[in-house]
Image (cartoon, rainbow, N blue to C red):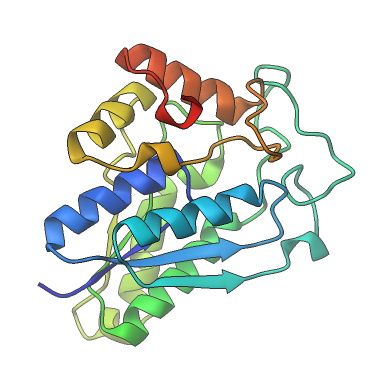
Length: 220
C-alpha cells in the first residue's frame, strides 16, 4: 500500500489520526507539522515526540503567519479567551490556517507519491472554526481533483478525516483502543509549561477524557 501523510500538530486529534494511519498502512506515515508562529509552541515538541513514537519521518514547514496576524494564537497583543467567553467564531481562529495546511500537505503528498492526506479536523466538539467543517473538506477534495496533476489524470490524493463526526470522548476512546501515545499530546492554546485548564482547547480536552471515563495521561 502506498504511503500516507498525516498533518500532525502534536494535539489529541492529530495523534489519533497518526495511530489510525499507521495501523491502516502497516508503516509509519509521513508526519507533517507546521511551525506557523503559534504561541503554544510546546505542541511542536509534542509533535516531534509523537512522530518519534511511530518512527516516522517528521517534516516541519515554517510559516510566519504572525506577519498578517488576526488571531490570538499568532498575535501576542490579543489575549486567548477562556472557554465560553465569546460568541461566534473565537479570536483563536487563524485565518486560512487549514487552507494553507492542506494546500501544502497535498503538494508534499503529490511530490512524494503518497496516496492520502489525513487531518484531524472535527465538527462536533470543536471551537467553531469554519475550516473544520465537512463542507470545507469537500471543497478541498475538489481542489485535489481539479488542481493537481494526479487529480486531472484521474488519481486524486485522498483526503481522510476519520474524526470529523466524532465527539471528543469518542476520540479519546479511539486513541486508547489504538494505543496512541496520548501522554505526549498537548492541547492548551496559551502554551507555557503546563496547560492553563481554562482555554477552549483545555476545556474540550478535559470534557473528552471525563466523558470517556479516563484520566488524562498527559496530566498524570
